[in-house]
Image (cartoon, rainbow, N blue to C red; front, side, top):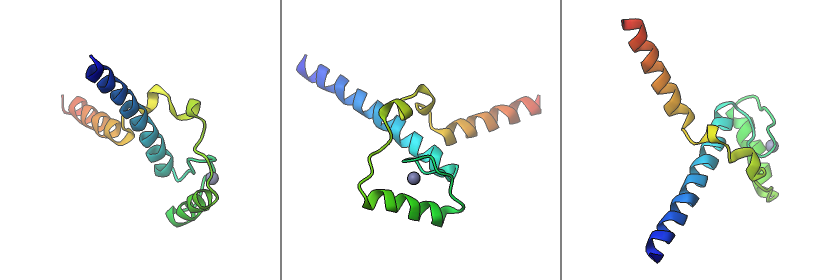
Length: 92
Ligand SMILES: [Zn+2]
């Protein structure tokens, strides 16, 4: 029973980690800082901006921002699935 409870808790942490990673990936894909939502021109500027946050030990955004159901599914995977469905629908 203890192992089942631990496995369940670990799966919850994994679920939260997936949401956080997808939140970060989506923001970076949109050239947006995931700490403060500032839009940056180009990846180099975004990287420097994020490094400034990291060097000043900025805290990640509040959990209420990234702990959303929209971040359960990987943005890129969703894009691939939609693209394939659109292609399938155009084929028939
Ligand atoms: Zn920022």
